[in-house]
Image (cartoon, rainbow, N blue to C red):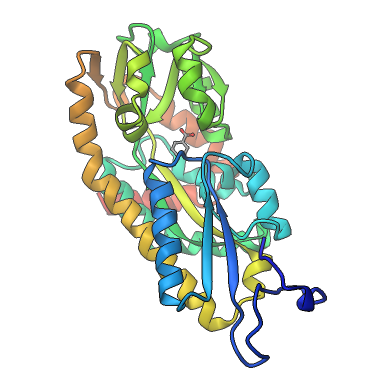
Length: 327
Ligand code: BEZ
């Protein structure tokens, strides 16, 4: 939360230092996220904090809490709502648990490739979806980052979708991915990111749904036999600010924070566009069984998923049209 000077205790929104009534307040923001320190999202959060401090002449600082130090994403979203936490870089997956419209981003094979995923996320339509967040979730959505497209890593041999049936398959805890693997006949096992490496290593799960950065850079492949490059879903992230904290900021500070955060969110997107193909190539060279599959591998799962989610997400049809127009 914003650290408040005692003299300002009665104010709803305060800051560490007062420089006089007409001068802007100084803030020590706290930003939470679940990714570990070496992850692209965590580094981007730190870069954002450093640049904000610099551009504000030291008036604003950001302390980054990685690796779920402040709680899991559901808990952090709650803290953002109460103003106990100022900012987060959060999976759109968690946001979709509060506002199902964001589930549309997980439509199977919405994006053809990582560059296409970037175009979808940086579209005016995707940006307009953020407008609903203050009313529905008590947070302000500043912009999108992402992680790579989703792949499957399995301890057992997988040659067809039938081989996934009954597998205990780790998923990020959110409904769109649960529906995807339920439709496949797997046994989807919701598990937050920090628990996944060990769960795969010790056989608590048979397989995981994951992205190229974690599979390659953070070495999740080490505990698997088969890597399936399926690219079946995109995985957006959203830069969030507590609506309560936002309400206490001046227009100038809002602009400074939003512009600076968006610069670093865009850099996250650019990093994945550049690096994901490289990681995938590296994974191919590990000697693990590697298969590349397309939508046909999953049969009619896309249509079945859309039948469920068109009821829940008004934006699904719009995003499917947008995706078709930007291929
Ligand atoms: C995951 O749940 O798989 C995940 C979460 C954040 C960043 C990347 C992956």
